[in-house]
Image (cartoon, rainbow, N blue to C red; front, side, top):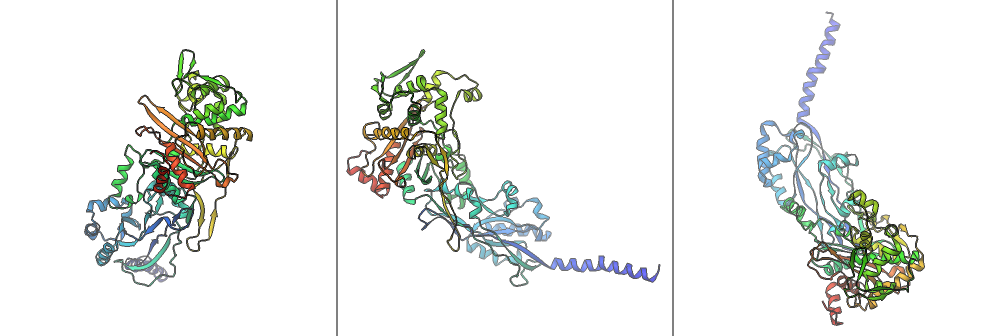
Amino acid sequence: MSSTVLVYVGYLFSMQIVDGYIYSDRATKVTTRSIVSPSQRGEIYDRQFDVPLATNIDSFAIDIIPVEIPKPDLERVLDQVGEFLGMSTAEVKAKIPAASYSRYEQVELKSGLTFDTISRIAEHLNELPGIAWRNKAIRNYLDGDTFTHVLGYVGDITPEELQTRYNQGYTSNAVIGKSGVEYQYDSYLRGTDGRQFRTVDAHGKKVDAANKLDVESIPGNNLVLTLDRRIQKLSQEALGNRSGAVVVLKPSTGEILSMVSYPTYDPNTLYADGGLAEYAHMANASSAPFLNRAIQGGAAPASTFKIVMSTAVLEENAFPIHSTVDCQGYFRLGNQVFRCWVNYGHGPVDLFEALAQSCDVYFYTMGSEYLGIDTIVDYSHRFGFGESATVDLPGEIPGTVPSPTWKERVKNERWVGGDTVNISIGQGSLVVTPLQMANMMAMVVNDGIVYRPHVLKEVRDHTTGEIVKQVEPEVLRVASVRKQSFETLKQALRGVITKGTAEYVITTDSVQVAGKTGTGEVGSDSQWNSWFVCYAPYDSPNPDDQVVVAVWVDAKNTWEWWAPKAANIILHGIFKKMNYTDALADLRKKGWWY
């Protein structure tokens, strides 16, 4: 072998073996660590943009990087850090994915830790290779359960969520919105995580100052909602501890001023010790506190559906509005008899009297003999039933508008005349949500126009407060109904308050109201849904002054005709600028029974 070849062989040996050993040895002694610096989540405000509804509390988390722990020390480190965190070694191991033992990856062991706990761990970091701490704020909802179903809650990202959002910059330690506004607008709220680069030795000790390559985190944007804190609390207390929902809407813009659902829960309990157990308990509860009944709870609209029926009669010229139907307390179809809610009957009633007194026989007759199921289905869809209202909250259900085709497909049964009779008074398989009912009344107020309902008003820069995004009114649908038909309908709805079924319940003197009551029997156990949907002021020339209120009290409650009573308190409080306690006291002074 020539001397030249020997020189090259020696050089290659030096490069691959000797130098490789030297550099490998250095790598075990000095390395650069990249740690995620989490961004601060944006705050959420009501429409006044003063006191936040959702903010952050300083807290800490402990992470482990298993690959940095020498194998002989692994059990000791896991046991020791577990003692500090109040976890068994088995619980610590359960937190660590198997793949993390062979690659550089931060794994969160526990969050929501106090400064005292972090201080105790920090004093022993020299003994705990692969262990690090970081800031991780806890979400705090200042009004407890008042805004729960709109705001939602946040939680640690799951492996399934990470798979779909990894390319959006989410990491395995990310906090993410799980429901409500927190989920819907997570991209605005979450901000952008930063990175801290540190050179450390094999024991994890920092051996340099801050790295110039550090990337600062960017705080998330603040959200300003359309909700009004005063009206939200008023609505919550007026509904009380009754399963159901309230929606207060500005018909001229689609802004939701209040959205309440009961049962509710305090999301702050999910971040306290035992939060996972509390979540599991509520998730399995028969009362379904996580359900937002305003958009996810459905029921037959009962007599409030007579608004749709009346519109169809007027628009189709199906029956002269001043001609009468003689209600004797029942309606006969073949060998079936359908009763009116007034057993002895209302006598002769025209459209105005029928709507005011909620005469079932009149609307049985209209549906069965003058309109027919195809026309009823058509007008149901014109009002938005059976379709999503496209509110900017997750989980909304579209409800159901039954038809002959639907019944054959879903139930494998033929449509019969009795089905048409039932749907004519808002019963049967018809299902609507409180938000859809609010939109129904908004269409009447706006003479056929419905604006997309929304809870986001503005997005503001966290630092400067400048408006990043502003939500403008957006037309959701325009009904092909004449303005004159809506004007006649408004007069009839005012009659419900002045001389009809709501005369002795809607007693507020703060504003003139127009609306419709509804009571629907559920099953055979004499359980009743209570509905009331209305708008006020009835006589206002300025659409911006008007609000729509929809209240639904679920049949799961012990029967009480509460929906119009709750609406009475809400309207009195809104237009007299009173809270629940003062509004109730003021109504009582005027002789209102409670």
